[in-house]
Image 1 (cartoon, each protein chain N blue to C red):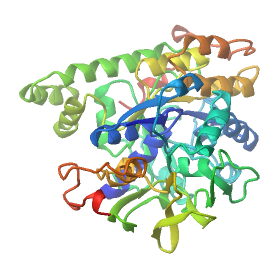
Image 2 (spheres, one colour):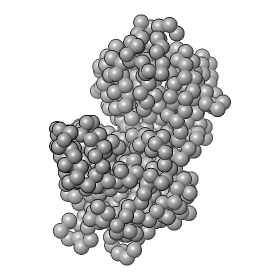
Image 3 (cartoon, helix red, strand yellow):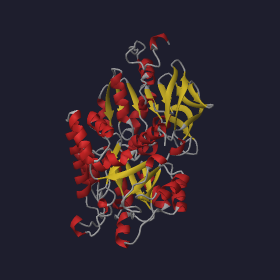
Image 4 (cartoon, rainbow over the protein chains, first blue to last red):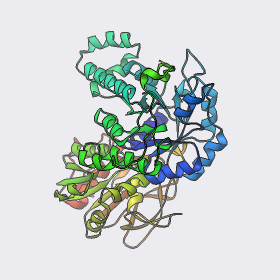
Length: 291
Length: 208
């Protein structure tokens, strides 16, 4: 990938800021998401809650299913590939996906190497729990970062932990001297130049969204107040009682995250939220995949 | 000089930064209470037009903004902002604000792999950098709308007396001349200092 394409890919993420990216499994859900104001959709065969329930190996979705969603909506369409599975990524690039999520939600294909994302023209978003993971993914060519959270649980605790941790580390390096940054780059196992850029700007060099466990308008607004530039909502919408109402409310909450009176109104009568699983109750921590 | 920047979704922060760079104050508009502030012009940023179109209604901004623009509030729309201002959107039954008599083709260059960067001539400014991100283009200009720039025969910037639209994103470049062009439309006395100009273009607006 040339530098120019990488800049264009970072630019697309900039245009998604302040928006909600929704997981959808059917054309009908994709249309509901677009009508509700999603800034992009993530096309996948099973949402994380069902992947978690079904167990077994979880892979890239059927390209025919992804294409049907591309034809149904005018907003960007994203799709997931397994960590390290560069052939799945080649397939998604061939069908002109707008963004690839190299995702820990699917079963990892490689327990050592991530995809060399610089070898692609299509943009990638990757999950990160902390600054080290974020900068390693960016170094590999990711043009957007999201927190990992704990997908398919409806439990926000991990997304909060990852976002707080990441922001804390950014604030910390922002105040360091250049000679100190060499040591931090070594500790975090990240390229010095990327770290120096974070230290200078006091921000990641790419857009950073929150993902994993967001189920309510309040969850979305919490993540925005903690520094997210937008949110991914996976199981939270189509596993709830009233997906239309809930998806619209989450879209509005991301724009009006600083307005508690609005958030109170948005939180009213949303019907049943997705049934949550507590962090302690789950056997498989997806966030630990791909460090 | 104060500019309101629609802050519902998308790249609004990039616009406020560019305005700051050329010494123009701005504030974000997220709901109708923010319209009580005085503003000399409005910027509608890039993002997703379907999202902003929906939020304009739910945040009770649609009617107010449409009236203000119709009554002559200067407005600058980039990418999705252009789509929101267009009177006709190809293949779509109804427009959004629809205040500018142009027709547009959404996603005119296809998906993200069709996004590109180019240098083209912008009327009165010379060659400027243009970043097209899943961009639209203008298929026709109606009464009193002048094309300002083309890319391979397609219109990618246009203006009326009070409105400026670009299919590309000047706010994503280091070149402030298109923003200065908009401010100059509002206040003919405004010009960039030579320090504010990119090295590639020591050009003065007042001489245009």
